[in-house]
Structure formats: C-alpha cells, structure tokens
Image 1 (cartoon, rainbow, N blue to C red):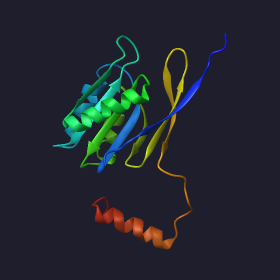
Image 2: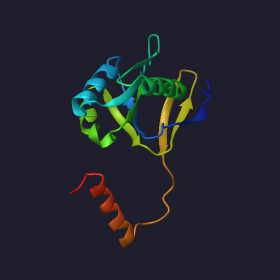
Image 3: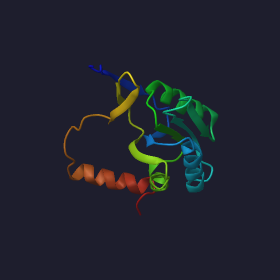
Image 4: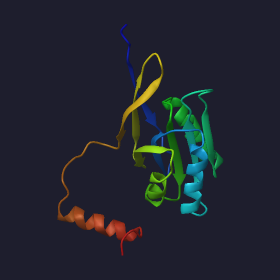
Length: 164
C-alpha cells in the first residue's frame, strides 16, 4: 500500500503590533497550563492561545485574556489543522518575556517559532492526518552585518530596554 502525501503551506497572518509563538505540545490541559504561565510572567498580558487536539473530538481548545486574539489563535490553528500544536497570539509584550516559563510547561514539547515576522507553516497530510514539517519565519538572509549594523543593533536593544 502506497501512502499519498499532500504538502501545504499555510500563511499565518499576524495582527499589527502582535507577536506569536507556535509549537508542538500534548494533552488537553495545554491551554490552561500555558495560560497560567503567561499571566504569572506578564501581569495584564493581552493574548489568545489555541491548542489542537489530536484524538477524541479533535477540537481546537482556546483560552485568553483578549477575545479578538483568542479568536485569531483558534481560527489560525484550525487552518493549520495539525494535531498537538499550539499557537499564542500576544499584544504589548514579547515572546522573550514568556519563553523560559513556556519551556517548563509539562505539555510543551517544542517551540517552532516565536516571531512578529511573516510566518508560513509547512504541513504534510496523509490519510491519517496532518503534521508540521517546519516553519518559514521571515525572509532569506541578505548578508552579514557590518560595524554600522552592529551599532544599530546595540542601540535598538538599549532603546527598547533589553540592555542598559
């Protein structure tokens, strides 16, 4: 028996002023444990999270503190259509603010992207279902930074408060 593979590229639309984190996790309580990790890391955080079940009713489970972002996370994850994935859409804070906490959530297996760049999810589909092959985060590299770019990078990090 020959299995047929179908490949798909799903464009993920990131709302203006938002960042997202996309990854692989397991178990229905992912949304609740990730929710707690975020609100315990960033007081007043505005976000939506969605988790795709891979068995049983295979629903997109979702939570969040912002209804618009919660809806975007759920609808986007449904379009991706891969079980045991999760998506967090956040506003007014950065992935770096929650990455360490997320890595310690028992259900989180892998973080594939943490970005505000254009994102594409490369998906393969078989008779059984769909899975993530990888992601394309942003654009192809154009060169290597020179001294001017190094100075700009350092100034940017200090301007936004990540270095002193």
